[in-house]
Structures are given as C-alpha cells and as structure tokens.
Length: 257
Image 1 (cartoon, rainbow, N blue to C red):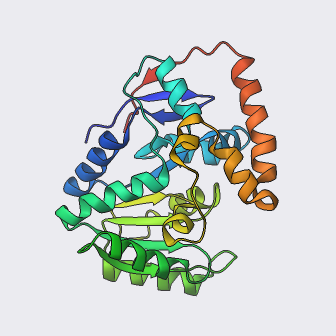
Image 2: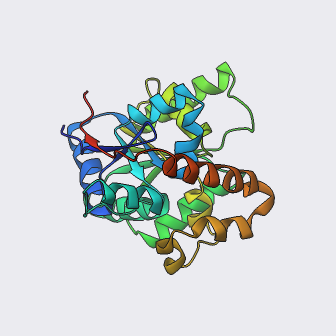
C-alpha cells in the first residue's frame, strides 16, 4: 500500500498527515492486512531518538509516525504541507473507534496501570456502541519473562485483533512494538501512551485551545510535575536549540518499503 511522504525533523521522519488521512491509511492497512506499527510522536520522541539509534530506526520504519505535537505540524507546514494537522494519540483513538463502529474492526489493549485497560474498554464500548474490544493485557512493571511472553502471544493469536493499542511511555512502547510486532498476530500496533489514562478517565486532558496553542506540555507539566518535569524541561529547550541552531532544510521524502 502507498504511504504518505515524510518530513525529516532532526533525523526522524514525521508522516505528512491529518486525522482524516491517518484514519484512511489505517483503514487501508486493515483492508489489505498490511502489518506494521504506528508511532505517535512529538518533541519528546524526536529528542529521545537523537541519542538512541534503535528508537530512531523504529520511528523511521513505522507504518506511520504521526505528528503528535504542534511543533511537528508547524515544521511540516514550513516544508510546504499546508494540509498537515495534529494527529494526537487520544484523538486518533477516538476517530479509529468511530470508524470501527461501521467497519467492525477489532481492538486489543496492552499496557496501563492496574485496572486501566478494563476501564478503558468499558469507557470506549459505552461511547462507541457496537465496537469490539476482544482482549486486554496489563503487563508488570518490568520486562515480560518467557512464560508471560508466550501467554501474551497465545492470547493475541486467539483474538487476532485488527488494532493492538499499546499504552506505555516513550520509548518503552516503541521498543515493545518493534520487539513483539513479529510475534503477535495483530495487523496494526499503535503506541498511544497517555491516551489510555485519558480515555479511562484517570487523567484530564488539556482544553482544546491549549492543545492548539502548542502549550499542552505546560498543562501536563502542571498536572504531573514529578513525573514529567525532566521530559519537558530538558527535551523542549534542547529541541528548540537544535532546530534554531541549524539550517532547517526541511524536506519531504517517501519511505521505501
């Protein structure tokens, strides 16, 4: 299947997308059974990739690497893609679930703290009547052992979901998708991080005007300072400095399969 072009942002290829085109690509992937993973990526993911070649490779060999934050959108538009819009994990999840009401696509949730996956399942089934969440798995706060890996593979094989949503943090979720993609019988794996907590009702989302302004990071920092201070107060200034300190030279390219 044909994938959208990408914009090179500090070595990470960000897919030229908006919510409508992202859902269209995912629908085509399910229709054609094109397997792959989706990275939902903003400043944090791009900056983590600077010192992590494996993470950068995972981003660059994805089915899609969506512009999760407004800085990715602004840089894409500077490269000439005026239709580029934010493809934020929680919004993408909502759009895909709305599409699934019509298509019958199936879903599996992996990740979250204890109880979150079940709450997420109940919440989305209530909001989108008729959707099929065929399984959930809450991993321990450590790497899965061999027995757990085998049990997860068996459970997913029994369900064969169209979409396997991964609710870990970056870079854990990207590494999980890269390592387990070949082993799990799911068509598309999507790393959406905090979307699990948002849609389960455990964490509040920023108002829309804050999201559109590019200041959502500040809202989240104020809401969870102990967990997020290092991410935002380290990566954000470094990102601005890297972008400002180079000739942007933004260009588009097509990912070769």
